[in-house]
Image 1: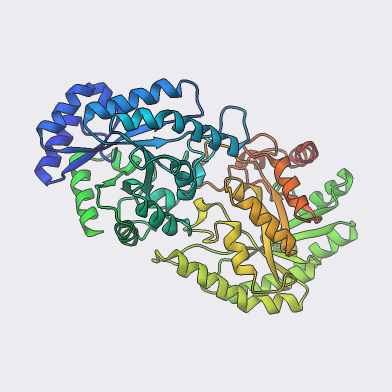
Image 2: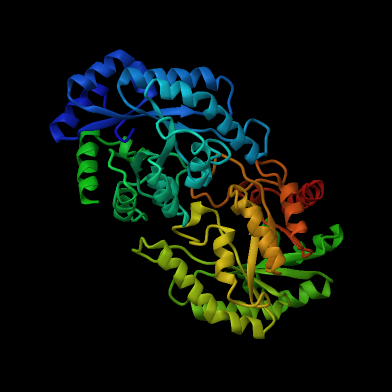
Length: 257
Length: 257
């Protein structure tokens, strides 16, 4: 998503050239390219698919069919992790606890289906500014509470610095998630203000914002996480630029962090 | 602030006409009008000044002089409560815990000065989307933690639905704050999306957004709060309209909640 302006074959070629060993894919571009074809492209280049983004939106109609399809696509792509953005309030509702309960119920439905196929669901808490319209799961504690009834091989969490950096309870939750083997994805993005209208596409390049990313990396490592580290920058500014340049610059910023 | 387009004398006259018994004032319009004059205007109309907004910004230079001035202005206005928006990260810093410690130190400096003058400081946790640039105090639990070393007559909290509605720990914190007599201000605003650029001026009229405001009012009442309820809508949309109409509409929406 950081370089969504790059067609998949170009992205793969430049990752190989730059020594980037894996990529997190999003469903829409994968489907556009063809899921089988995308899987072969990445695999033949010797890259791994770190995660598939995203399942979720459990408070909307049709969630079950869509999420089973997402799990199947993850299998085809050869990744072991499906990231979940759980959905906000159902239309007309003001009941956040009910939305969270509905999310937990949906995940209970999906968890065995995912586990049987070798896919781990990674519940991603989103920043509280998305609580009404994208994700009623706002803290890592809430995500863990939903995950904990299931084996870690079925359900865990995504730790994304952009969403969690403000939360003084997040470090303890990271330690708890790590000890239980439930950190299934770790994503970096930096925080900057002013936020753009809609607050979706204003993430900052690593190292240019307010988040102590090195401290977050150390925290997650100390919690026992040894998996891939993804960089996920939704940014109108970066998307408007040459994708290869942005990819190279992001790699540099990543290594500097 | 909800009807900042109304000059102070008009605001006072229409509050009297509509039976609104008190108003929360902001320092800038008060200073423009003259603090003594504003105090007389409100007092002579039989209204109370519910709170003065705002002190704070403790992570910026000059905070001490400015906050002592704010306390003195609160005394002149005859209110007993100064709302504090505590400030974000100092320039160049990525250390949120350090910013929070600095805020706690500043409040320790101010609390006796305020208490001696009959002014209660009301720490307002702001939504986490403001953590970097406006207020590193993002939850009611954090605000209470800073308040608790001081007598409630010196330091308490502001409960604002717009900032706290997403937080599943807020209800317990409201109960704790109420039991300790530390709810010094209760403010209503509704949440709507998409948020505007800068995310400051997109609050929704009561009853038109995602927050269960009646549940919040019940929660705060159950916690023992019997003080004034303020409506604080920062809204480009409402500010662009006729202030008297907005005031009347807001009163209706308030009564409906």
